Every structure is written in C-alpha cells, then in structure tokens.
Image (cartoon, rainbow, N blue to C red):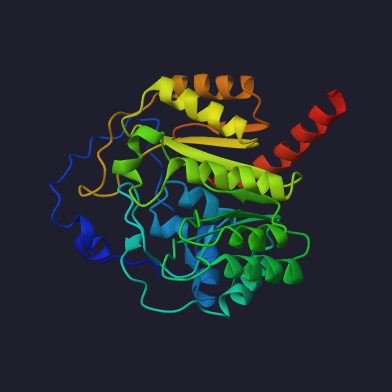
Length: 317
C-alpha cells in the first residue's frame, strides 16, 4: 500500500521549494531496520485486508518494533491528504476516490486477526467530504466493537475545521475509548507548519469532546525541534490542561525529505524528561515524552496506565 514515489509526486506543493539540509541523527534517535517474523506477519495481514497504515505512510521510526508485536496504526479514508502540512510525509493533493464503505469491515477483520487488546485508528484529512469523514470513523468504531468486542479503541482524528460542528457528536457517540487530536506544534509555528489548521480550533475540538462526554479520555501531542522554545511548549501544556486534556505526547520532529520543514535541533533525552516532569506537575493523567514518542507508540500500555492513573486520582479525591 505504501507509495514509494519521489517527493515531488507525493508532495507537488513542495516541489519548487528549496531543499533543507537533513542533519545527521544523534545516537539516541537511531533505530534498527525491521526484520522480525512478527513484522512480516503484520505486513501480510495489512496487505491481505488492503489497508493503509500511518506507520508506513508517515515513515515512523518505530515501525519495526511495533509491527513485530502486531501493533499497526491503521489509516482510514485513503492515502492522499487534502492538507499540506510542512512536516508530514503523507501524500498530498486531491483524493482520487470516494470513501470505501467496506473499509470499516476490513479494519475490524484485521484487528480481530491481530488479536489486539488496543488499536489506534487515524486518517488523512478529507476536506473534500461534507462531514470530513466523521461517519466513516463512527462506522469503523462500530465494526471493531462487533468483531473484536474486547479491544479498546483509540482514534486520532482530523480537525473537522470545514464541517458543521455537529459532526463531532457523530464520532463521540460511537464511544471510542480515547479521542486523540494532535495540536502538533506551538501556535506561533502554525502558519509555517500547519497552514490549513488553526491552533485554537484544534484546542476547542478537544475541549468539546469532554463537554459531550466527560468520561472519555482525551489526548493530544506535539513535536519539538521545529523551532519552538521551551516557554511556548509550557504554554501549550497550560492550554491543554485548560481544555481538560488527559494525555500528552511529546516527540522529536524528524524531517522526511529535503523538501519538508527543516529540523531546528535535536532535543536531548534530558530535556524530554524535564518536559515530562513539568507536564505531570500541571495535572496530566498520562505523559509520554521522549525522542521517539509518537501518538500511537506503546499506546496500549499507555492506555492501561491512563486508566489506572484516573482511578488513583479519583480514589485520592
């Protein structure tokens, strides 16, 4: 499923941009190439079910580790995104096809075959569809509940910025266990990094999820190394807590190609540890902050800890 075409074809809007140098990664970033039997087995199920994964499309550095354990993050609604974020390696442009009504069933079948305790479902942005794909998310959640009732479900959604606000209710009513939407970066970098999005819209989206269902876990993440400073990162943490977000992820931005946003610097493991400590101090129930942290990395284990932390907090209240 993954598209190996040159960057100029995957990202036509970036083709004429000057190249940005890609600095050598420090030792704490490097990972081994995927070679395990588990990796091959997961890849086979993805291909047989004709599914796309964000692990491949976005070039995630953790794909070898996760797939060796059968943990693949499935990306619904196609593999072409209508946005053109400068950090992302998913192909951009006009999606060539309508939504596949059989996709939710294939996703659920793959979840059952993989025997997942926890699954993460994400998508491209589909600004060409009236509801932004909200009903498709809901159908996918319902299909997984039917075929794999013991699996907890985490969704990582678009911002639905061009849709009627009521579409969010469609997704929340399908009762995912975790509702994730990434802020991605600090507000000052949005015009460059997320030109099609709006920081306070994304923040408000997550706040509305809690208003619609106070029991639902909410989650969001940012990348560092894009040019932000520590003060701005702490301000984002404060904004997230004001929106009652439960779970924060912070990871290192890695530049997919020379045409993408330049890496400003590699944040050290010590700085990540300091961010994690500060975030817990601000009241997050769960924090994952490390160079290789990604939204769905160790998501199942983290969800178990998230539930435990909520119970502990309620017991101590």
